[in-house]
Image (cartoon, rainbow, N blue to C red):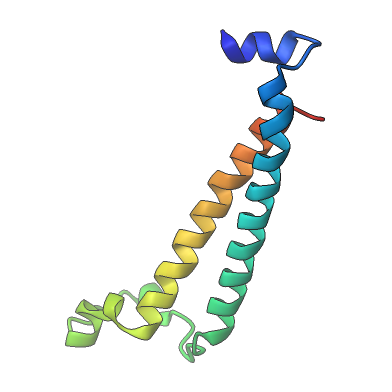
Length: 104
């Protein structure tokens, strides 16, 4: 009800006019920082010569490395990429919701 009234009213409350531009700026800065983190993490990762053929062929590696690959450098970089991309998705949705509520 509150958001509906906020979207349909022509007058914007003072707190919205004061805080939403700051919120939008913070969200854009966070999105940019996370995008740079994804770019750096992808560039630092070593290339995989097989190109993921084990997944296609259905082979199963039960080695120590396969069981603990989340603790290696590549595993940490993969986690950074996944977490950053999910955060970018959430922050982008929040930005467009805030833009719909207050467009300036």
